[in-house]
Every structure is written in structure tokens, then in C-alpha cells.
Length: 455
Picture: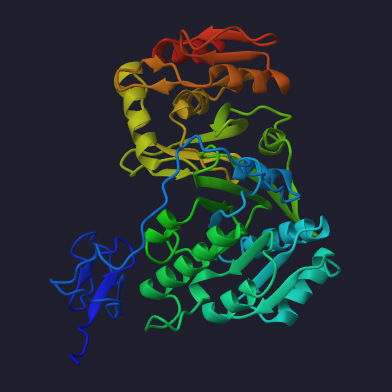
């Protein structure tokens, strides 16, 4: 029998080469090639159309009982999932080390188990004593969770198929699982793909909800083959800065609900606590308005969240190179906005250092933040605080025009609910909302005139 040829698979893009090299020729990533043995080799004469069984087709309107979501017991977790766990679904949760993934899943597993559901928690990273210490600290030692420390997929599936179908199966983590059907160490591309496939197939057959914990790389993406994200039904990212107590659970892919929904938690001594009103959390400490501070109503899925954008302008001596520093927003978009303010509004930022920060460790990707960032920059340059009861949102074009954005009414209602009385936005942004007045800013020059006139 011929020895199978070696091949190397890129963990970033999945491309295959027959020799190792430092850089992938397709995606240009470095040190992402790992060796694996081909799983199956088909000859050219092999006929795949014979030897199988015929499929039973069903119409899309076939009668059947609707799937009932199961609550995790954590409202913020349910919100990010789109309403709860769907039976038979596979959820992949990634996040930085120590961010609180295992703590969150242990809390959710304990609440489901106490509500009468069977929960199986498999840890490939920690021993039973280590998980027991965390459960004692969280006050969950009495929860009827079935726990085991194992890494063999064959042993896990044999155990699960020998018992009644559980409500939830947690695998912490998929990178530690090992299948004896595939050669290679745990964490390799072939092992992660094969282990996930077997576990997901069990979830579909048994209608048990499956949650896979995934490691992340240094740039924040989930480690392993990208096909793993295609195999699962839901991909979630648990985000946050270690220097901040707040954590955000973000839905990146969801076959059963809206994408980009978030759940907000606060890390406390007794575990993760839900934050039902994240707007008040990100706006805390604004009793005394200062120059360079603007409030922006961001949209996360269907939830409006008010955040504070802070800007600082530092004048430099002639000849010094100005610095641009951004935390929580896109650096390239800041450079574009500064160029628009200089070219279309006549402002000068070339001889000043510019610092921009989104308070609370929040990260913005909403283009509607352009107007709020511009307001914060102009306010810092004029050294004049903005109106304390105002919110700002709108997308800025390269011509300096302020364009409408989606969900204006939801943003305005959230601002009015939190006591804001004024909104500066683009023309034709939506219908009137009681309790908050709207002021149109069709061009950035109108915004600059407004702020400098108040100065």
C-alpha cells in the first residue's frame, strides 16, 4: 500500500500545499500551515452515484411541531441568541483567554439544570477539581450538572448516546478534542474539523443544543479552520477589555435570529451580572460636561445603545510630528473625517495631536458615528463643551454632506427615554419622536458654525 502523501493546510484560508513554507501563498498569512494526512483518497474510476440510499424529500410546508427555544436563564444571553437556545443547534463561542467564557456557560448551564433540563458539561482544559472551585465561588456547587473532564470524541459520543438526550451539551473547548479516526494532535485543522463534525451531527440527531468554546488567535479570530464557522448555526464573540469590568456577548452569525445582537454583562465577584440598561452604563460619569465629549446612539442589532465619544486636541510646537491615536473606532475613518473637516470646513488639525476614545471599552463600527465624532473633534478644537442634552448621529460623505442612517426613530426613542432633549442629525432622518427636538445638519460646515457660535 502506498504511503499517503503529506500535505499542509492553512488554518486561515484552508488552502492545501504539498510542502511546508512559512507564508501561505493564497492568503499571505505567516505560520498558518500545519501538516495533516489526507483522510480519504478516491480513484478516478470510483462511482459515487452507487451504493447509497435514496433520500426522502419533504415539502417546505410539511406539518410539524415548531421548535421551542429554551431559555438559558440569562436574559442578556437569550437576547444575543435571538430568544434562547434552539434544540439541535450548534453554537460556537469565541473570546480572549480569561474573558469569562467558561464562567458565563457555567452560570447558564446551572440555571438550565435547576429548571429541570439535563446539562452535560465536558471540559478538556480543566480537571473536575478546578471546575468545582469555580462553581463554589459562583455559588453553583449544588447545581445538578453532569460534568466530566475528557478529550476523546469517541468516549464523549458513546456516553451521550447511552443516556437520554440532554437539553444542553457544553464542550470546553473544541481545540482540545481529539478523534482517533484522524491522525494529528488536538488543535490541528483536521482534528478540529473532524471533532466538530461528529459533535454537531450528534446534536442534529438528538435535538440537544450544543455549545462549543473556541480559542482565538492574537488578532481576535477563532482559531482553527474557517470551515468551523460555516458548520455551526450560531457564532458568538465574547468581547471586553481586562481593565474594564464590562463584557459584551455579540452574535456574528445566527441562522435563527438577527445578527449583531448583543448582551451586556458586568464581571463581579460572584460571576457575570446582567446589565439590562447598557446605555446608562456607558454614559456614567458625565455630570460635568467637558470639551470634546459627544453622545452617539449606536445600533447593535435591534438594540440602541448610547455611548460617549471623547476627543482630545493637543497643539504642538512647529516642526513636531502630530500623532493620531484611536481606541474603539476605525483609524482609517478618523483620518478620512479629519481630511473632510480640513478640506470642506477650513479647520486645521495638521499641527495638532488628535486622540479619540469610545468610553467604557466599547467598539464602534456603525457609520452613523461620523457626525458624533466630528462634533467631538470640533468641540475639542474650539475648547467648548457641547450641549449636555444632545445626541449626534449621521454618516458623513467626502463632500462634507451629512446623510441619513437607518433606525433613526429607535435611536431617538432611546435618547428621549434617557432624558436627552435634542438630536442633531441629517435631514429626512425619520418621523418626529415625542420628548426630543430634532435639528438638521445637512453639511459639516453647519455643524462647525453651530459649535463655534456657541463658543
